[in-house]
Length: 417
Image 1 (tube, rainbow, N blue to C red):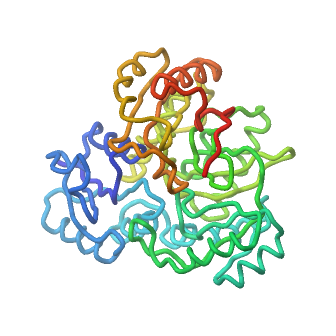
Image 2 (image 1 turned 90 degrees about the vertical axis):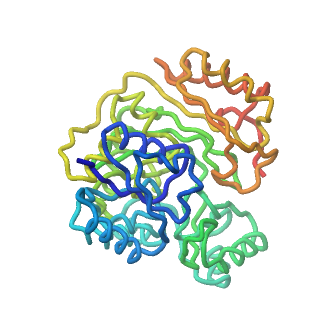
């Protein structure tokens, strides 16, 4: 008997690949829905079933899944995805098929950043001053009210796309006008023509990984210097005093509760201030950037298995636990490596404490987008201590590029475009 789980879109690396690999290893048959399944390297894998469909059309996907169920002896047991964009569709489809999932109305509401800010404010949760903007005039008014520097964000974006810091009105307005005229993102997914303007917060950033409303682990983030906010690495667990660790976990749980997101994984981002925290946003899906791999290495917590089991309504035993090691990922950006770096991959794999390393097929020479599309590779390390992790990561990155400074290391002096 095939155990069928529908998966909406994916990528060939990262958390999406972890999810597909986890399904296959667990004896499940992924039913993969994509606008262009042929572009993925796993296309044609006999262990995966494929449906080519418009993944922006929820009703169309429901017709496809209902037809599959009518014609298959093995029915769909669950629906999932690793992408923010498709979580409302996942909730809609699961509900329509009578399967476990997030409440559709909560998933749709939480997909948009401005709704989150209003929900957090209503609950008195800590966050920077913000204003919702539907026009360039709104943006100008918001900047004057909030005061520079400000951060401008598309309300339905993901992966820091379109997120940028501004110190003056002309550059802010040019950016705002450009985004307000966009009806779809680079994937062709419809986006709301609205922007969120908020006060810039200069502080370290962490994320809290949450499952079924309960916090499991804290992740420390490494980010390029402003004006862009490209995440260049993560470390698990985050370096925080125990009392701060507990406070961050409590705030994350309050944030997901404010959005009524009680099912499955959430990835909650916040700034660490001198006297507390400031919420950034909640992503209603499993953490990306291979963070689940870091959590598994550091805590022994299998978030991928938890996602799969929750998707089909199976019992799950998952809870916060003390870390047994430190794990970290460092991303290589365009221009940090070139084709000669490929010859060093085998050497890097043999460096003590290196878990995994990867270089993309194409290696552009400069940062172009200011978001994850500028990443061209990564190194994952795991060791008994944070210092051992940094030694391994630095050795690996240096072997790949022969440079001394990298965006993935916190003391880098490089500047983002």
